Length: 445
Image (tube, rainbow, N blue to C red; front, side, top):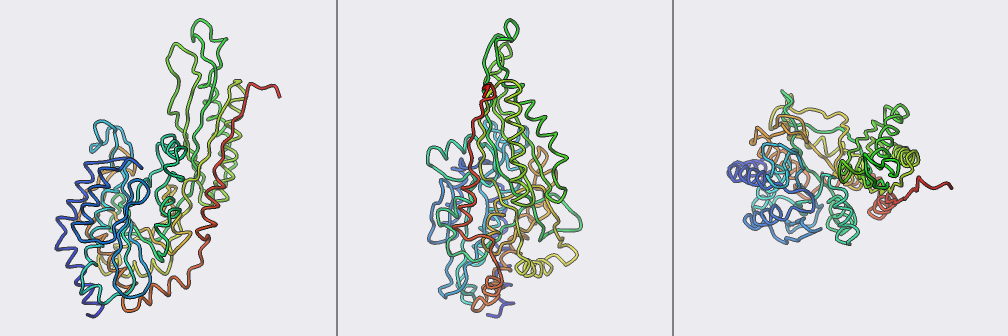
């Protein structure tokens, strides 16, 4: 078969199963689970892997899955990813009644896209024209939420890293993968349907515990040490740092208090905070992280409380590979028209696809198929045909270009790519970001 015939076959297979693929997305929409808790979603995804005859299915990192489609000929390995987890969004129309978990970021569509790509390529006639392997992975825990819960998993030895793709790298599940891609839904952006390129921020996460002394809030507040006041002062200190951040580093810091005290009648003695420190460069967000720590210590010192600061590696900034993006853009343009393919700018958000992009050629395109603000109460996918079918076609056709014949295009992209990190130096960097400090603000020393 010619490459044109292969592409027609691939599109036909996606169209032929369109109803089922959209059904997968909608089923996962109704079973939202946060990271490292995606047990129902993982089981359902594994059932779909088996339904579409994906072989060599492995379970990775608590809830993750991996399957390999082998052409039978040596060549590069291309990985197509989808994310299993949801957010927690109170009041979202599709939120779980008990947990408030909700797919307010569109990950339910990613799993469906990934399966659609896999089943379109898993055909003897298609595979006959390709070389190498296609790896499908369903990855847990992309959203860096519930930091305290995940840090407990880490302390129990169940995970080392809070994010799923980091765990996949550490566990060797991506060893041998040469190229990676994944498409994310986004809010409507007429006339654009698909988007490619762009950059975003990296992060560290912080889990913070202010410890004070409980006392009667009305009768004897002078005998207490108000940990909530220490936390509030620390937040003010963080705000006073903002003028020191460089515009080009796009620093974003947004702490929340997850525990504000035990009872209104008692001076708060145990107050918990979580925050991200984001920036467009690794150097930028690590510098900002030091300033945040100073503010946290200052809050504790002013009130005479103590503070425990746990810093954990978050995401690395994304680098969409230009050569790979050009192949995707060509196929996307043929699908929806060149005028409907946008070029992404910089985003203050983050994704652990950024980590992968520092290691191998990676793209993270977008499909404009939703309404509302991402991670918000009003974010819902409204165009499932675009979100699943069109997005899957653009990736599948790109995989065909990469692996057609002897996989020359994939080899060329890999040969030209200069990784910022090896697997070993990447893991060393993440581990260097771990830091735990206890500062006694009531000490006279």
